[in-house]
Image (cartoon, helix red, strand yellow):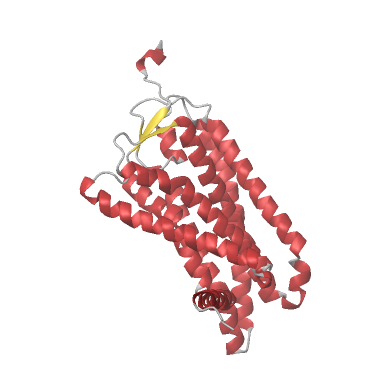
Length: 321
């Protein structure tokens, strides 16, 4: 039978980023530092938004969930990548691989919808400031966030379910630092046409819908800003959108470079570099992008710091009667 020519497997070997052994210690330290700062920054932002009532607004609700999903993405990928720098076999089981891809796909899908929701939020805030609280009510925000998580989980389950129908064989080596869907297709013994079609349909629909929302929102915002007669008003409006637009540009730029290029132009090393950007660098940068330009977050961080210093002074120098 034809299947006798294949060596079937339930394990894979991740070989991305491991071509130059001399760089392993440097890469380990660099990515460990990025992961540590990513987790502290994003989870710190989530805690900040949860604790401070003044930040319970639509923009910060979306931002908090974006930070949570960035933490999820980093935690799904980075620990295994760091382990593989000094692992002898660099093996990942099929079930670990599917779990890693599930959470990566969930975080990526949720990020797309959250960035679109944030763009719509800025659109309403700038074009209809007087109706903002009516149009972006707390209930609507909660419904939008629930919709984001439902869409993210459904999208992940569809692709993981379709991946499990494939039989993997061949070299068993994934030229990547995590289990992404396209490298897995290359190891399939059976034709992954259905899987590729579903990626095109579902992932394409997610990308087209969210990119369209972002583009329309920002075109309307820019058109409104250019009509403003006040330079101060234009500057304030541009400042409000600048951090989000920067994050969107980096995220979609690396994502489109990774998945939209023709297959003839694809190169394993370039794919790995692009993947580093949207799985590690963007979650690392987002807390800085959104916090350093945000006066409300900075003021609350200063208040927390001053309160902690006062408490420490009281503990260190107790008042004696």
